[in-house]
Length: 178
Image (cartoon, rainbow, N blue to C red; front, side, top):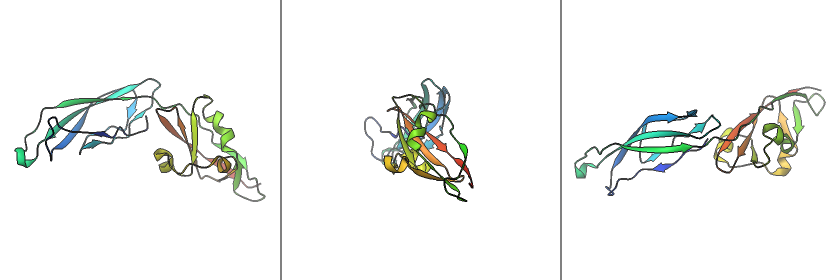
């Protein structure tokens, strides 16, 4: 959940220059992010908003290159299982600034992790942008995350992973001057 299957489509036997179109045929469970498309790779970011596995079935059709007549191939179903991501809790708070008259609050984000999800088997990474959290890049170091200056209304993002799936949770503080 929360990732793209990056499923590369091919023909069998291999027909160079083939193109592909897919349509969403069915969805089981609370899956979002599905869409019809074209190309050699299904890259929908599928999110399972439930607590049990779900699936998406795409109907894929290949069209041969003009060199082999441009014929439309038969439909083929491709089913992708989408496991649920770990559940997360909202931990937004209203606090007073840790500096007189300021608009920041220094927080130990590592200490907030049990409030986000208390399951001891999960991994957490903290990010300053949602895009970085989704891509799982540019995570804060433990030193930075353990004394992070949260600015009034500016979110940080925690990626919570169970090793298979991840969920991104925004954490936003309202910081009042002290």
